[in-house]
Image (tube, rainbow, N blue to C red; front, side):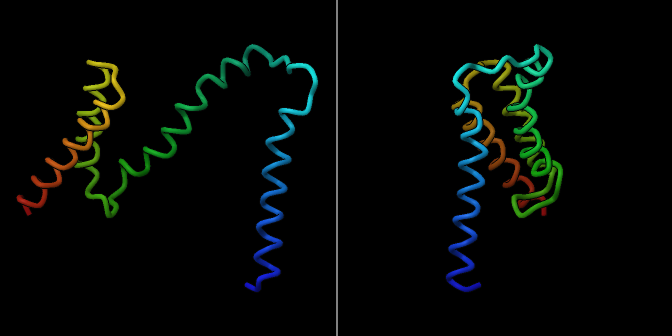
Length: 108
C-alpha cells in the first residue's frame, strides 16, 4: 500500500470510530432503554469474555494442549469461587498452567 492509501485507511477508520462512539454522547437527554434490553446488556461483558476465552481454552494452540488450559482454568475458577479475588485468581491460574505444562512436557 502506498502512503496515501495508508493515510486514507487510518483517517477512515478513525472517522467511523469517532462517529459511532459519539452517537451516544450527542443527545441532550438520557436514552430510555427498554427494561429487557437493559437486562440483556448486563450479560454483555460476560458474553464478550466467554467469546474471547473459550476458543483459546478449547483449541490446541501454541499455548499448549486444551487439557492443560482447561485444568488451569478449572483451578483458577475454583480459587475465584473460594476467595473472590481477581489477582489471586490470575496468579493461581498461571501457577496451575505452569505446573500442568511441566507435567505435560515431563510425560512427553
